[in-house]
Image 1 (tube, rainbow, N blue to C red):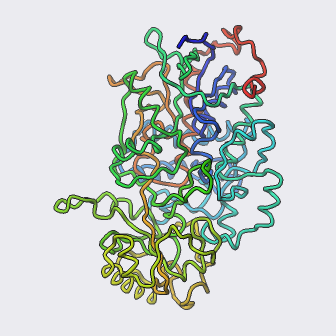
Image 2 (cartoon, rainbow, N blue to C red):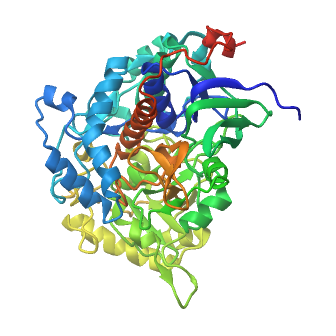
Image 3 (cartoon, helix red, strand yellow):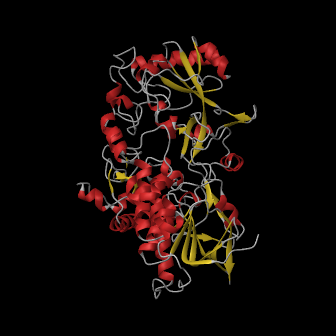
Length: 571
């Protein structure tokens, strides 16, 4: 294929989740000519499927909200969360400059607010944890502000995005949609208003379009280009070369949808992706060809259990139900292994993560994978399953039986063991204390215990986070592991990719899930992923700006004959 003439820019960003969007917007605001490349047909990547939360310590929005934070407490919390797997310089960059990045993007027009009702996950346990102020939510915004680009945003299916996370919590949590304000949701839907991860994407894309950033869809990168020992651009699958005078930022997300790579690098059998099918590990290939180092965060706690909701139409996008923060939080549910045994506190999913990696030397298999969600008719009557309203029929792709023994046979689970486990659990539910795993003791949840009262057959059960599993029919479905990936490119505090010889690769940066999360190590905290991605996207742009302090916007771009890039991209 004959190569097309190169287009010249200051910075090329690959990927349009929050990591790429923040790097592109920061660079554009600093006066650079930016090309933003998206492999798929829609913008947003994994960010569109997220709840849209950012964790930023010691931020000005919390202070305005009456929540005074302290940097030393922020550092104490992240150090605890890291479990010894953080890089000190990169951790300090996230902790100290996240608030700076937040102010920067607020000045650009991106609007976030404090998420009331959501604590640090380890509040009451970890040093430096706080009950409020560090988790931020995007303001609702209209997709119609994007004009013709509104059809280019990835919108999740079968789950309402017309609300903030704070509202979800106020309305009873993600497991009880009957209490949501559906009239308000319907009005917002008519007006094109969005919240959660889709709102994040809309906020950033709107500001990028207003700055004439050249956004390209279906622009997959085949390889990086290099000149005089410096990465100076990217060659696309169609042969076009896109030059980058200052550098290339890889923000491609992880390798979640590359099943072979994911199972190999995560070591968790039965892997399912929770992200778009474009996240196939391209960054590892194209940066690896240039000598990039990688790192694995062992014992990564960002592992969820869930299942795919079958497609209704062939063109439907992937829908991964995170049972870990939905069904498993509710009463009348348990999670068991193939022996029919519980192995942790189902309502606090991080407690299960180390158990998922246990391996039986003699049986030559994982002890707790595969595992299965078990629930009864009490749950089906009172709570949402797979985004369906409470009380809706459980779909026929879920196994069911009149006894737990029969259900075990359908699932490949020891039926006698399952029945014994349920009987023991029911005793705990009646007493209100889980003597095996202390279920219900953790303070963090996305489902309100208040709305669980007076639900289920035993209305006087003392601990609403338990709830007996004893009313037929009984239901079961296999749960599959998925996570914010454990393996990525090694980067420094400026988001520069590090070479095998230990020095940064000139002109090459990686942010978001394309980079190993050495800023916070093993710990999972809602908002870490988006918060750090936004911070290091900003820091990558700052570093490239500082390398060329005398740069004048527009230099070396006389060959670009398309001032209205938004119109050009839409043809």
